[in-house]
Image 1: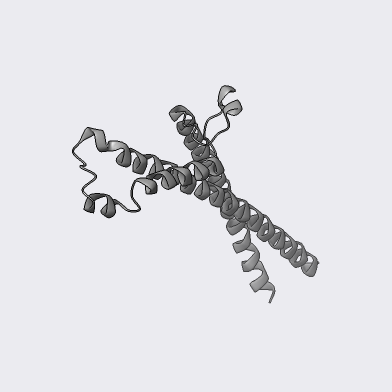
Image 2 (image 1 turned 90 degrees about the horizontal axis):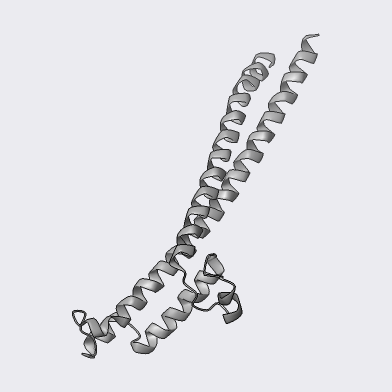
Length: 157
């Protein structure tokens, strides 16, 4: 039993260190990508759905909640033109080659851009949680390893 505890202790410390290092990497990547996404959104300066007072202060869409609300609004407006792209084409009301008919296409682009931002920010939030869990797990594994090490040394004396 003593040899098993010795091997287990030897195994737990590297696992703990790797878990903590990977958790830190997950958190770093999540924060880095979240910052990059928000900076890109600020550069676009989309203000759809933001109150006028906030727009005057320079606020733009740069959070998942704001992007979700704006995307839903764009989808609602786009569906007022036609419920689906096929319905738009079938009615003969839309010629994708006609520059005057590009409103629908622009709405699709804006809607996709905003929903992609919602998805990306959700993924960064998930990675923050995963990284935090990995660090906590690594710390717990390290503590268990330390306790086993202390117990093993106490048994030898």
